[in-house]
Length: 111
Length: 116
Image 1 (cartoon, each protein chain N blue to C red):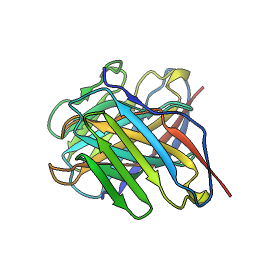
Image 2 (cartoon, rainbow over the protein chains, first blue to last red; image 1 turned 90 degrees about the vertical axis):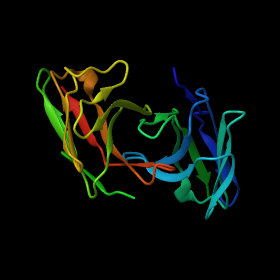
Image 3 (cartoon, rainbow over the protein chains, first blue to last red; image 1 turned 60 degrees about the horizontal axis):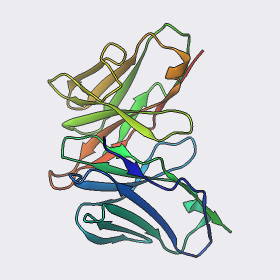
Image 4 (tube, rainbow over the protein chains, first blue to last red; image 1 turned 60 degrees about the vertical axis):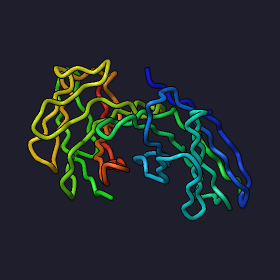
């Protein structure tokens, strides 16, 4: 059974600091990895996608993937109060597959 | 990216009835997906809907309870049948966009269902 593990938090980070979110997955055949942000009462919003080992940067966000360790992370630099949300890690095995989600990490940015 | 709409946005239903949720994508997509998000929980995949073939259901979900239609490349429906209070959830549809080397799923706004 495919599993995606995240620390549920809450993770509290001061405004302006770096928030670090982590995720591990069980299926070594996983090919695609995603971070979604979900505000309360809203649907998930795609933040980052990553498909190969290493780092991928997009603005204040950096996704890191290590397939050997089955580990994905998301760094948020210069954290803002508007970054306060639940961050969902999701994994996809193949092109036609749906996503397996972790339980999400609740991030709180303290002003 | 894809713009995805869902109808209805929310509904309150009586137990034993059925509700059909519609999902519309602004571009043609091969794969569409239906998820459930129970209160306070993460998303769980219900089924994958490929145009022109039967939907593929995940473990724990069956066609009699969640029949799905996929009549064309931009539209799908999910029916929640013979509802009970345990079916109270947010139901989300999503679609894959992008190339075969990097497909990304975008989500609709969700349908909030309360079963009394």
